[in-house]
Length: 237
Image 1 (cartoon, rainbow, N blue to C red):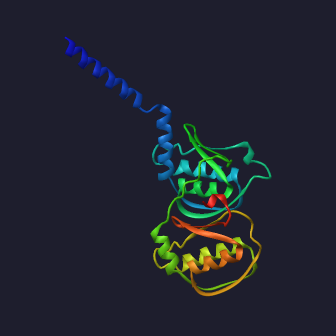
Image 2 (image 1 turned 30 degrees about the horizontal axis):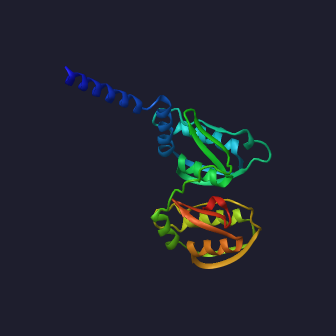
Image 3 (image 1 turned 90 degrees about the vertical axis):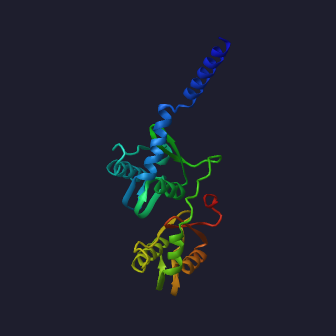
């Protein structure tokens, strides 16, 4: 009888622990959003000086049309401080980008902090003490392209930095004999003065070194993207 009581107590304890570990409804919702952010791919993203509101509306709409999990997409809400004339502007140009990568670059370029809740993704201005933005990591294929793609001429006279980067991106696609997609470029931080530069037969590594040197910036490769940032920028760490 005593042994039976012990066995019954053990079974009840195991059952109680299992119930404690069982994920809640909110846990399941958050896990689903994480999955969607990784699996939903947006074929084309192109913005120039767009408002954060219009960008997040676009992501919400496209996430729904590209959601092959349950068709509901991802809800994205903005903190009230991110609206109005002083809100940051967005300039992006991507093909076939997962939402998780898109939010990463959006957070870097606009100095945002993101939180996933059961109701969706919340974006707010980044504050001291917020968790660091996790780096995506380097893609070996992009490094290979940076070495292999050689642009015969890079000539600009008093051109905006965005024009310089956009032209390099376009030329990288034209001269990419690996998969034809070239590289993507994201610029964050302080505005750069108009640039005058003349380069001949340099690969992308050398080109980015030269333009960043003149602009007072640094760069790093993350996934299929070259991220250009201020040398002293906290978000570059």
